[in-house]
Amino acid sequence: MPEGGQHAETGGSFELELALGVLGPLEARIMRGVWTEPLPIPFTVHDVHERMPELAYTTVLTTMRRLSDKGVLDVDAAVGRRSHHYRAAGDPGAFLAAQSDREAAAVVARYGDAALAAFALRLEALSPEQREALRRLRSSS
Image 1 (spheres, helix red, strand yellow):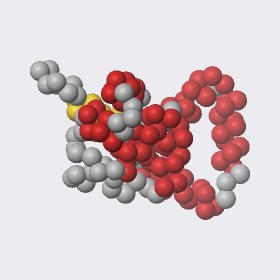
Image 2 (tube, helix red, strand yellow):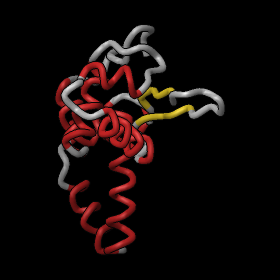
Image 3 (spheres, helix red, strand yellow):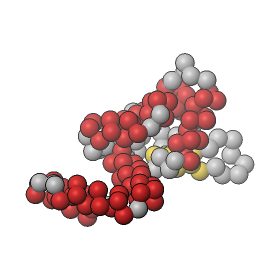
């Protein structure tokens, strides 16, 4: 990611909006800022809170902690330092890929072979262009 901001190429606004749609409202608001606005690298809760002062500091802190727990933000909590340092764990596309993998695994764990059969039927119904797009996605991850 570029120095002075997190907003290099994010894969387009469609991907950004999909990623934000997976998150809760406050999480999405914070990640929109992280992914699209210039922030120091790494950034702190204070840096994010400055951009949304109408929220309580503790609300921003708790939400960023949740984002870290979900793997959306990486956090460096060095001993002896007052504030934690955060950075995006990846761009919206990387988040979507990781979240899709987790959700697909959960569906397979819950429904077993029936879920795999449903996925296979969907794959068979894809156009050649969609299959090629999937191949490109798979090879880039």
